[in-house]
Amino acid sequence: MEQTSSILASGQALIDIDLTVVVQFVIFLTLFVVSNKFLFQPYLKVRALRKSETEGARAEADRMTAQADAKLADYEKQLAVARSKANDEARKVRTEAAAHERDVTDKARSAAMAAITEAQTKVRTETEAARVQLMPQADVIAKAIASKLLGREVA
Image 1 (cartoon, rainbow, N blue to C red):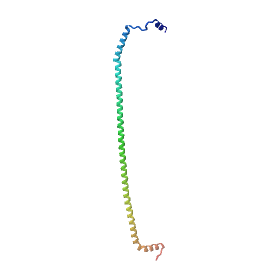
Image 2 (spheres, one colour):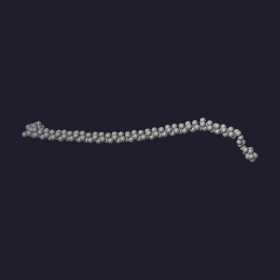
Image 3 (cartoon, rainbow, N blue to C red):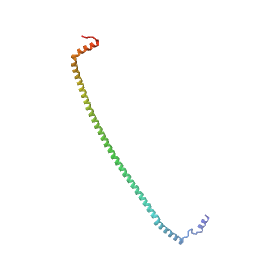
Image 4 (spheres, rainbow, N blue to C red):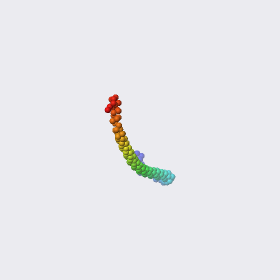
């Protein structure tokens, strides 16, 4: 510190400007131009190229993702429409099947009721015929049964 204050006090210049400063400046400029041309500019070009390729790839990936999302949404929409149609068709088939089942059941019920009515009529007719046929013989049959039960002749 003491040395610095003594140099300042003596009035001598700290840096001597002579021919070496010019040589150093020329070396610096030459090194700057060469470094810029062969080192910095190629590096900046490669960096810009990488950045543009990366951004291009990202943009392409974003575009493809958007396209895939659009296709997926379209497929889901088509699937929903197809499901809706299938549900409507199934509902229609179930309705038709239920109507057919009702028709078949009603026809079977009608046929069964007709058969039952016919059978009842036939039974009544046969019963009346048997009654008419057996009525004149009823007294004779009753006397025969009573005689057998009593073990003697009934008048």
